[in-house]
Each structure stands twice: as structure tokens, then as C-alpha cells.
Image (cartoon, rainbow, N blue to C red; front, side):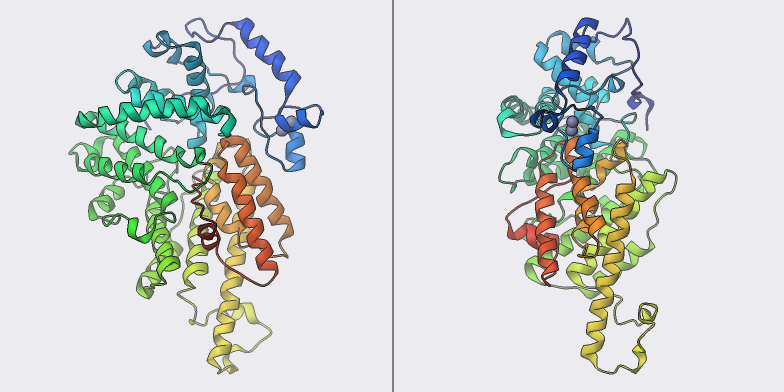
Length: 485
Ligand SMILES: [Zn+2]
Ligand SMILES: [Zn+2]
């Protein structure tokens, strides 16, 4: 990671002279207002809120989303931001300045694993003068984030978004090679934020994904790709986004070149490089993207390819995450298990039929059973049990990561997959799933986190009544296209 992305968030420090943060009295006023108000739920219940960030202690206990309407506590203040001395804020209104402030401090942090290594925060500021589309995209998402993407507060968010799109249309015609990366960043942010403001939950920014793919093809074709960290980050970001959308694209909408050799070769050049959104999981993301598309095809068309399923299973089982950082390791394990669970639930377990599961059947003598039907039943039972073990472990791993750690940002997708497989016997884990989705909502404010609770609860109810199906089937049935990334 290039050092210019390094921005440190330090415990309450005095505002420095060279930093044009709002003057001291205003900060104190906010502090005072904050201590009077607390989070939305505590105010509604007329109880004192301790204002722990990101989930207050009462909300933690209640397992409800924590919607703090005031700025974050002092410890999230910036140390040395160059933002407020840039040309942008000199010519902008107070409203824009405060939205940029909110963006750098809070809203941009929901996309990365480490606020100190965030290319979407201060590092974007350098592009604002030359790319109005990027500036207005940031203003739009920041405004949406401030209001928890709730319809009553979306005015500025939607206004800025349409300004951003208008600028983007103009800029796209005159892009030079050096503009590709910032145009990609802009389209990525417009794309991922599409579902956050769609009340019907049926949009996920497909046209943006397609546009981004065109730019990625240009970026990886550049002779400087191998030496360009930002270009590699862009590819990783695309692969992450592609993975998150892979279940959402109808088989007919999928790009024919999703598995292009060029993408694969370029991806290989980024292995081992820390990516701000997904750490060291780029190969896994690539694999999960392909698996997601395959699973969607199986659900929609019922067409199976056993060789491919074997290959998916083999590659997933063989993939081992980096253990450099404990939380990153847990997260990566969870994503791997998310892949295996979906493969087993939606397609079946390719290695079933290979009878090495006797350990699970110590009471029974499997070798004496000759009835194929019975063997199939046993296979199904074993597969269900394997899925459940992965699910329990994944929920435990993910919830072992503290809500105050930014590594919770990548949890939505594996938490949904694992959570939906918990049985009536896993009451403790089920409660953890609901609690965690509420916490995720408190941090990233993406409404899909709350809808997912509805989704898993419906799946649990069906499962407890003896009907098991995948979260993907139920989501499609409901007409939702939830993007949790
Ligand atoms: Zn509270
Ligand atoms: Zn709260």
C-alpha cells in the first residue's frame, strides 16, 4: 500500500494549527448536543444513552440497530487531514464541507478493512478538482450515510447523485488512460450504492458493473499495470464487487467474458498484495465470483456440470488464507466456508458417494447397507451436517470479531450464507446472527442488513417446519437483489 493512503485515526488530539477543522467552540457545541441526545432508540425509550460507538451498550443488550444521529465520538477525529486546505473546500458551501468531513471520517470507512489504509478517504481528494463526478458521488453517498439511507433524508443524496451521473456522462467521452482509475472508482461507488437507496431492493447497479468491466479491461491492458498499485487495487475492487453481485445477475445478463484469461492473468499479479477491501483474498474472490454465477445458473435453469462442481470444491478446500492477522484469517475462512456452503446447498456435495464419512456414523455399520436410496439419504444427511458445522463455525468466527473492529465490514455475505443454515438447535448462534446484522447496520447503515434478518428468520421458520432451501432461492422468490458487500 502506498504511503499516501496512510491516514491515522488517533484518540482525541488537539486540533492542529495547519488543519482547518471547524473551530473549537463548534466542536464543543456538538459534544454538548451529543451528550443530550444519544442514539435514536434510546431517545425513543427516554433512557440515557452511553453513546458507545458504533453500537451503544443498550442497543447491544437489546440487539437492536443503533442509530446515532450525532457525529462520532472525538476519538474518530482526524489527525492531519489535508482535505480542508484543498481547493475543493475553499470553493464549496458549508454543507458540502461537512459532507466531505463525514465522508472522510465515517462514510468512506464502511468500504475498507482498515481506516488507516483507505484509498476511498483522503486519497480521493486529489482527484476532486479534475473529476467532478467523483466529488459528487462522494457527496451523495456521504449524505445517504448520514441519514441511514432512509427515504426521508435522501434529498441531498439523490440530488448529488444525479449531478455526479451527469458529470460522468460528459467525462466518459474524453477519458485518457490516466483517468481510467478515477472513473472506475466513481462507477464502483455509484454501483455499490445503487441498492442502498432503492426501496424496492431490486436494483443492484448492473449497468455500473458492466461499465466498470469495460474500464477494467482497459486498465489491465495497460503496459504499466504490473507496476501500478492503484491499478491493481482497481482490479481487486472489481473482483470483489463482481463476487458480491455474482448471485444477482440473471444467467442471460452475465458477461460472456467473466472468466477471461486476461482477467485471470492480471489477477495472478495481485496475489499476495494487501487489498484495502478484501485483504489477501483476491484468488478466493475470483473463485467465489465464478461459483456465484454458477449457483445462480443452477437455481434458475437447473443445468449442472459435475466436473465444474468437483473443481470448485477442490479449489475451495485447497485454498488457505494468510494468517498474518487473526481477524483477517477468520474473515477469509468465513468466505471460504460461504463458498462451500453454497456449493453444497445449491448444487450438492460433489465428493458425496465417496464413503469417507464413517466417522460421523460410529453407531451404524455403513458398509452393510446396500440400498442405493438409503445411501443417498445418508449422503444427504451427512451433507446437511457438514453444512451445519461450517455454518456454526462461520457464525462463531465472524461474531468473535469485535464490532469496534473495522474487519466487520466484509461480513454481510458470509454471515447470510452461514446464518441461513442454522437449525432449531443452534439458538445461540441464531441470536448472534440477528445481533450482528443489527450491528452491521449501525456501522454501514445499509438497509439490506435489516432485510436480511427478515430473510434468515423466514428460512429458519421453514427449516423448523421441515423445509430446507437456500437463501438465494428465497431472495429471488421475494424479488430482492440484496447487495451486502
Ligand atoms: Zn443508545
Ligand atoms: Zn444505540
